[in-house]
Length: 22
Image 1 (tube, one colour):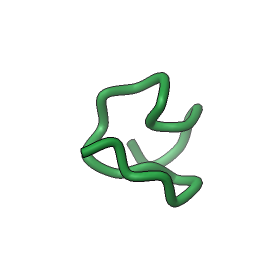
Image 2: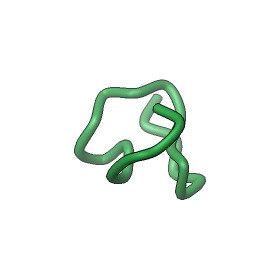
Image 3: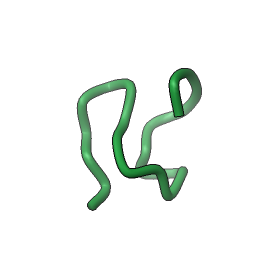
């Protein structure tokens, strides 16, 4: 996701806050 809540809540490959889920 380009914009939105942290990847901790979304199963996105990367996080806008710099917190990778996978």
